[in-house]
Amino acid sequence: MSDARSPGRARRVLGRLVWGTTRVFALALAAAALVLVLDVDATASPARQLLTVADALDLGAFDLTDPVVVLGDGPPPTPATVLVCYGLAAVVWLGLGSVGERLVRGRPVDADVHPSG
Image (cartoon, rainbow, N blue to C red; front, side, top):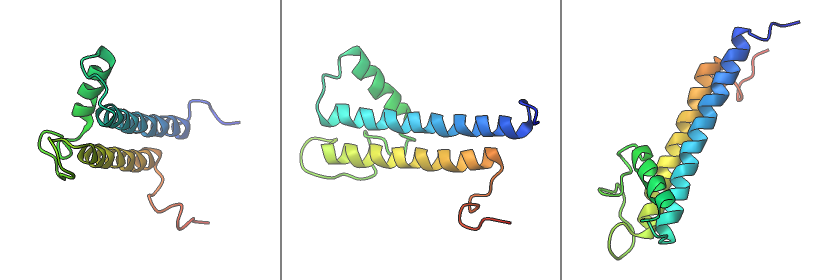
């Protein structure tokens, strides 16, 4: 019978927490992109808060004030630019979460590809 407070269990829980947190970050970026693309009233409190959170989560490299990629015609940021910038930031968060979870759990990144034993 294993102890419920074992280091392995704590590492699994912490790994899930890391992965879950980064998924929430990616979801917030996707929701903010949807708010911007659908041209939702950004003066409404929930939309404004979501856009503020997304601005903090865009990692600076995918910021909409100085986008890394400019797509489409019209006033910046265009819907295509919003989708690409926030989409790339969401993918980066998911990648960081996946690697972070594996590091916390102590499982090598290529363990699924080359199982030992």
